[in-house]
Length: 97
Image 1: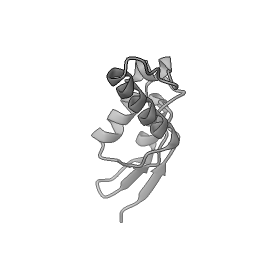
Image 2 (image 1 turned 60 degrees about the horizontal axis):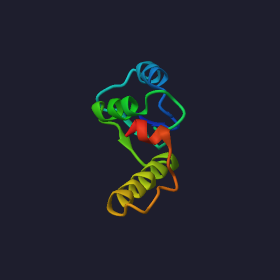
Image 3 (image 1 turned 90 degrees about the vertical axis):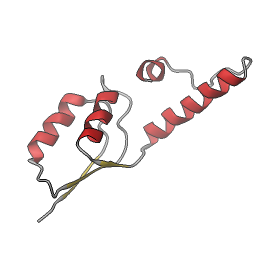
């Protein structure tokens, strides 16, 4: 019998995410869906995304991912228009990307 787990608001907290995954005792038939907000707040959002991908988890974008994508779009605009300044300039996004 397969189980479905829904996880949200990971927010870059890798240790807690790993502990949760371990506590679930996942079987091959289980499905895990991450419902957004891998980014912001915690120390290692990139590693959280990498772990979810490595484990084959499904995911949907949360508002924090959408915000990061908007920031990247502005950064692309900055490269093509030297007079444009990213209105969302954020050191946290720059470091994460």
